[in-house]
Length: 427
Ligand code: LLP
Image (cartoon, rainbow, N blue to C red; front, side):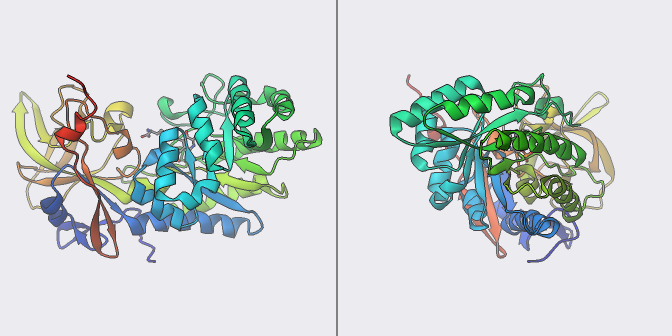
């Protein structure tokens, strides 16, 4: 497997954008737009990068990647990652069902996170024999105990502790402060573990933490894990046999044009976590989402119209906020590249979708070479939290998705039809 010098698999071949040797213009012609395109090699490369970083930093530490399904829950991508030895971090019965369909053999490597698990979801996960429930409240402990007893199963649990660590990221995706709804305050955790150990049907075996998403610095991860480690030692002295430490996900990427060496940055992440885990004798679970899939994917869209409103120039694409909501929701930056390079002059425009909201933009005051009706553009780094956050707003169908592997493209989700979109409705 080649290690590319660019963190993205999308490269120009004679002025035409291609991914792993496959021409995007041809894909758009075959499958239509908007179209999500992913590189299987790029996803594998990231998984391998993370696995190798931990193997190098701490050869004796057993580490399992539990891919965060929410980042991109496509069945084909789940299957691909299961093939790399990954388990999964799920947050709903729906995501559990995806793992069951895509990678049933990986069910034993599933961790179940989330603040609002329902009885039916617990039942399904107990029946599936998942590895660990990451329990986020005392009320959830009670219900899980009752469901395990009813089904005559034992639920292996971790408490998701809130370490009160600040991590620099967008406020909507920061989770590790006590002001956030996530987890159980670490100061109370010891007491809650004692209670958990007394409840029937529960086996406390792990401690879990997740401080947020798109975090570029490694220190906050180390700080949070240090607090978890101290708790693990206390719990063991209380006779609670902790075997798993789940450090969550959240490792970020570069969305702009800044230097980003994913292998080097993940090596420092691995070094930081390994340093804290040193000598603890526990399995490390990680829940990466974005790092594995974001840069492997792009959303290809066609320019419908351009127009000038006063001083402003607009480029209107056939993709919209319902297909990729990150710019509208988090003011997130995504690089936008023409699929066919041109010699045209540079132009500053707002690149927007057709949805009836002023928030429906992909970029504001962005300089690109002039774009014209019929041009294709690629919204980069759209492999994570792109399709998985897509909605039907404005009664727009979900885009199609293509996976490129071994220089050939395969449709992994066909474009939805309007009949399917309205299928559950009753007139
Ligand atoms: N584990 C837990 C418990 C999580 O809540 C998340 C993400 C992850 C793992 C994976 O985090 P990652 O490695 O992907 O950063 N929609 C937002 C991101 C929301 C993240 C939610 N939780 C975005 O587009 O930036």
